[in-house]
Length: 113
Image (cartoon, rainbow, N blue to C red):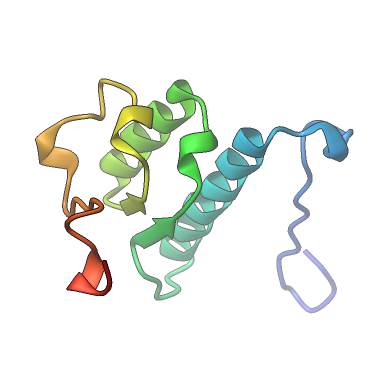
């Protein structure tokens, strides 16, 4: 705690060679930070959404996506990620997890060809 009684938090990457971080690892860290903030806000009674919208998650390893799915499911957080179906781990490639499916013939808001 600092002298005003406020908590101070320091965030750092475990790997000190940031330039060599894979894009998938970066995406995993971004997701973990978002989830951690939601859990922190709940603990501190700070109003926040339990809805996380993510992109580029197809860069993450299957085990990362599976762990995130387990965590958010257990904590009541909705984790929305746009991922190509063939990039999903088989454990997550189930109809019950799909809210919206888009394709070349079925685009969001039905705009464009």
